Structure formats: structure tokens, C-alpha cells
Length: 400
Image (cartoon, rainbow, N blue to C red; front, side, top):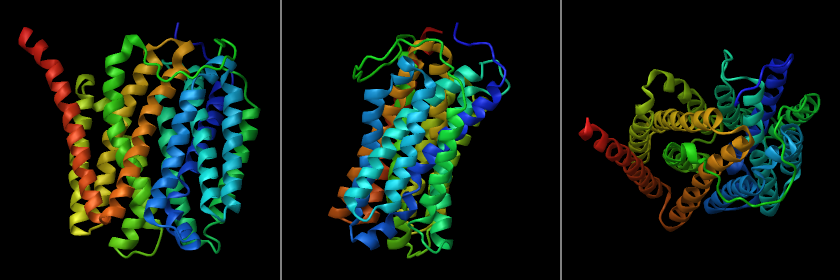
């Protein structure tokens, strides 16, 4: 039986878990709009920015692969506590960081906090909010995850423009909110009734056999969208400064905010699309987004970049929602945490690798041609996924 009866107080507990999920993820994108300021203060180049970002993504992936099953083994609550505590530690390191190695350490800590909370919070929300509840657990988890990623970058951009100490104020705010999350999680009860006990085992992949084909297709489509999100997160500030000559940080934060916010909103579009057509629509959206971002680079214009970020987010959200829904409704409870962690390990791998590649291209050429090449690669990958979906349906259509 996948769903558990709702216990008294589970609504308040779900709100606490969602808040902890939100602030932990928000803390991971606070540096996005601050990278140009860090570059000025520490004297590093654009490729260093993408490397620092990639360190975070690698930390997430390693954490997911090594610790993705931890909440299935020891329970959701202790893992949520560890994740929020690491979020506090990451904010503290960022607050005092004065060198690139310190930034890398902070990013690794942030990566592990995101890795720990992703599977644990998603599984906990599934257990606190049964599938027949008015608000679906997959919806809450996606909005907490992507909403946090969106909020962190925009809030940091606004504070960087308005606060007297732009490299300190965002982290003080993050630190206070993360500390509140630790206190909140500490006051909740354990939700998992299936704990196997801790055994260290690095499980590289766990794809549930019963949903394997849908899982892989969703992960591939969503991973393509995450590749765009990663590059936007790493280089939007550079685009605003070097191409558009915009010295403020709020607009850069707005682009990344729009991308992640629309990733959250994209899951709502799933309800208006026939289930069998969700990934097809997502792939078409990814191709359109790639074209818009290429146009932004060629024309040195802000509007197509912002619209492209929104379209990419909507398409990515649809693909993510499709994958998470299958995991949380069709996989066994004892495997939920591991399955969610594997899904996001794939997505965060796609988040990191293209960002590094774009950083290398920027160093070899410049920002504009690097962006155009990347946009073309995104369009090609989305087209490949789209063709695989069409070819999969063709035999069924012929048989009919």
C-alpha cells in the first residue's frame, strides 16, 4: 500500500518540511547573481565561475549517489535535520569566504545539503500528504524545490543592489531562515514506517523496473532543460554585464528566477495536456527555448533571453512533474527516496557538465558564440528525444 492515512498535525508538519526544502534549495542559488561581485573582489575569470558552479552540481550528484538511500534507511527526520544544518553551515562559509577555495568549500556543502533534502523531503511530503489529498505531494515538492531555486537568485539580486554589503546581507538572511528550518524540522515527527537500517552502499543508479521506460524518457527531457538552467545560472550575470552592459544584479536574478519559477509552474500545465503528449510538448518547448536564447545572443537583446528562460522552465517543469509523479505513485515506499535521488542525480549531472563546457567555449571564443553553440546542442538533444517518442508510438499506430 503506497499511501498512509493522514495523521493529526500532518498538514503543519508538511508545511515545515516544505519550508525546509524551500530554504535549503534557495541557499544553493543565492550565489548566482553574486558571481560578478565575487569575481571583482577575488579577481577570477568567467571559466572560474562555471567551475565553482560545477563544483556545487558535482557535490549534489555525489551526495545523491552515496546518500540517496539514507532516508529510506534511517528515516526522513534525521536526514532533513542534517540537510538543513548543512544549509546553515554553507551560509556561514559563504559569509566569511574571501577566496576561490572557500567558495568551492561552501558550494560543496550546499551541494550535499541539496542532495540530502531532495529525496528525504519529497518522500516525507508523500507520506504526510496522501495521494487523495486536495494538494498533491508531488506538487508541493516541486514548488518547494523549484520555488526555492527561483527565490534564492532573485532575492540575492535585489539585496545585492539595495543592501550596503551585497556579499554579506544575502547570506545573513539565508542563515536566519535556514536556522528556523532546523528548529522547525526538529519539532516534527518521523514519517517513514519502512526503515531498513543503515548500511553504506554506493548505489550508482536505481531505476524502478515497473516505470523504467517512462523514468528514463522523463529524465532525458528534464535533464536537457536542466542543462539550460545550469548555464543560465552560471553565466547570466556575465551576459548582463559583458553583452548588455547592465551593472545591476536584479535583472540577472530575474532571468534565473523566471526560469526556475516557470519550472515549478510547468507542472500545472501537465493537467491540461493528455498524459501521453506531455513529453512531446516538453521537447517542443525546449526547442523553442533554445531558438529564443540563440536569438538573444545574436541580437544582444534581453527580451528573448527572458522569454526563452520562461519557455525552458515550463517545458522542464512538465518533464520533471511527469517523472516525479511516476516515482511517487508507482514505486514501492521503501524505494521512493532512492528513486527520487537517482532521478535528480541525472538532472544535476546535466546541470553541471554543459556549464563547464560553456565555460571552456567562452574562454576559447567569447560569450556570444559559446551561447549560440550551446543553444544548438540543446535543440538537437530535444529533437532526439522527440524522435524517440514518435518512433516508439509508430508501431502501435501501425497495428491499429
